[in-house]
Length: 297
Image 1 (cartoon, rainbow, N blue to C red):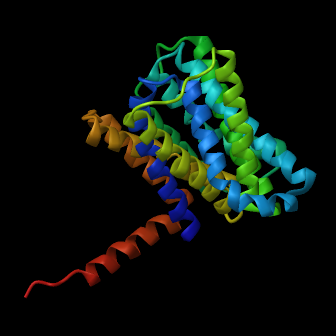
Image 2 (image 1 turned 45 degrees about the vertical axis):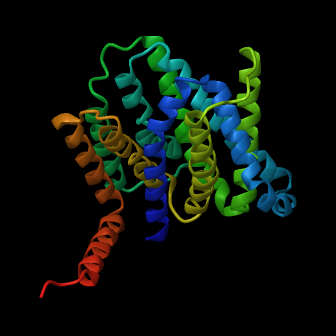
């Protein structure tokens, strides 16, 4: 139950960050933003990771490096795709990692997936389609780039699930973020370098995404996937989309409409099928809150 709740909490943070990041990258270029974000995140874990790095060995360091390359590649593919295709198409195609994760797990590692997990993944994809709008109208090249992002994300989730049980979570996360930071810094330098970020809007978004969404979020992902299959984790990750829509409606006054709310409901239904303990735990929390609430005389 605890791993599920922690992963849900991470998706809340990831969903919220869409709003401040959107405002920040309007003032500061995207790849420099990503480079600074992951440099801060790497620095935040440097002290606790330092005494643990030796325990990784060469294989553990290589595993962390592979995860870092996949993480950086996913961001790069998505960014390049968004320059060519529509936002709705990109949103739907990116969410296909929820199906690609069990498919790649079966194809590459012969990991069996239960019928309820497949059903939950299918419902989650249907919900993502409703939330993102019609995928029609996107540029084919842009759509392929975003599909590469989805496949890369699925592979990253799969490999975290395979590496996490064998290596220290803090050290593995640190190496992953350090490699991603180096990759983003290289891209930013190749695009002309970057100046020091300025302004409260940019710095608040950098600190939020670096410390909570990246350092803590990726650490939680590694810890949770020591205890949960990659396919189940991928379904829970889809909560990021409805949380992003909810925060957009609340803070940016975006309108979800009937399709949007229906999409969020389908995602929750998919999670209920694949993770029945999640809704059971939420029900227990609600009942406990009611019991603790003061009763009227």
